Length: 417
Image (cartoon, rainbow, N blue to C red; front, side, top):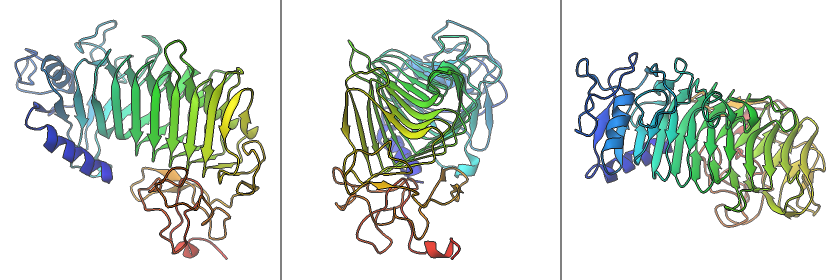
């Protein structure tokens, strides 16, 4: 996958100034013996745990690198609360760092689990940048009894976090079941999967008070116990500090409890995404009558429970003639480029890596070759690549397809006649 090449390039670029730590023990959780000596080593033996590696990286200046072993499950077991040095509980990050596996195939990505500590997994502290997580799974984080935010990852103010090819599953919190994005912080998510995370408040997958950019990612089977909202992605206005921003490109959100996206006065930008079979709405924008923005382009809504969208109040919209498709009229502001009715989507598909889930257009779908006519990658046009990292408009047509997936030229052999 592209993420392997991206992180390998980062490794090479950073290697001259960075310390590199190799985690080599998985079923034992222990603190570093002497943080700051440049050696990842626990007191008992020469083992380097993930916790010890994080403590060493925190103690050293510069952007260090922590390499996880392939095909292993790393257990966090040291309980502790209200401690911000990664000695116990969650792994507190106080310096820029890259954590991940860079050479293993997807089916051998490692897993980090917080099942035994009753805490989240990673806590990125105030002003830390950049932090990169790449090519592993984060499961069983629990922030419901700590600060209540970010079951897998919590970003504090003025931090910058990149998430590349991470699988988030069974993480829970009051806000941000997988990730919570604080005011004035920035999150970028690429090629990742969010499955079955849960909250009692807002954002079963992600809650954002800062700037969140999502591309080529999948969100499904989430649970939100907040009966008044119930959404997977939550973005909110943060006045007087700024305005929450959520951008979602080339992504699929389906089969979730509640709504896919809920914007409580934040700014939402959707392009080439697919929102299908969510219990309530595909998109809720401006329920509190705030002055906000909802820009939707080349995006597909289908069969969401109550209706595809609920857009109200003082919303600055960019959805008229924006080449969208919806199974009802709730998302569309008119114009002859928007489609209303069945979009002709396939059943849910799984990619060759058993990583992404998606819905492709059927052979006779009206989504085919009907998105914005400009060259993919230009403003207002389709994204240059689809959710599966395939180039757009490569099936013989002059235009790309609406939604997260570009139809391939041999798709006729996938559908019945």
